[in-house]
Image 1 (cartoon, helix red, strand yellow):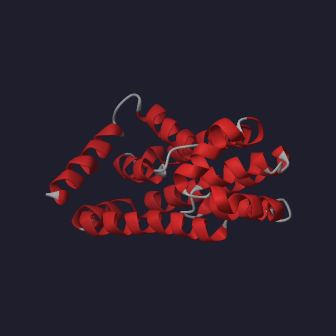
Image 2 (cartoon, helix red, strand yellow; image 1 turned 45 degrees about the vertical axis):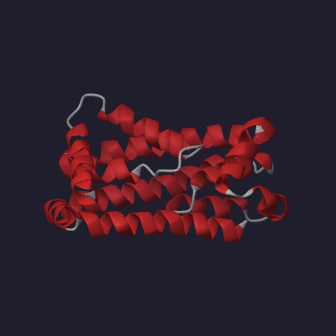
Length: 197
């Protein structure tokens, strides 16, 4: 039952790449993932690049730019709306109690934390909100975000552009297994986040 649904979702996402609003959808998910949304944009980026390899760099640029702007929104939430918006987001992800001790140590290594979180499955919105709430320099935050998110999305796009058709065939043959691995990585990111905070 799950595999036909996965196949439908995969086919729908591949079809989205041909839609005239594909870039807007990708930008929306990339923006939201950096501030409040739990699903990473890779779930759209990968099939979209596989469907239109010539657009790989455009899609990577959209993901990077929208993610950094979304990260700025997360930073602003942390800096100015922490009690009304930031705390509920952290509470939703289960990080409220650990946040106070984490905030004390954060600024000493803030740029490295943003860089590491930006390229891994770690929930990036926790870092964007924490950066604003702890007063991490906006310039440092934006520079680290641009570097980390650019590295992540351009690397994904480059690999898919380079290995396109074989990767697409591999994904289509092993869709269930790859979805399971994606879920494990996503959950693993949240578990790591819980122990880092």
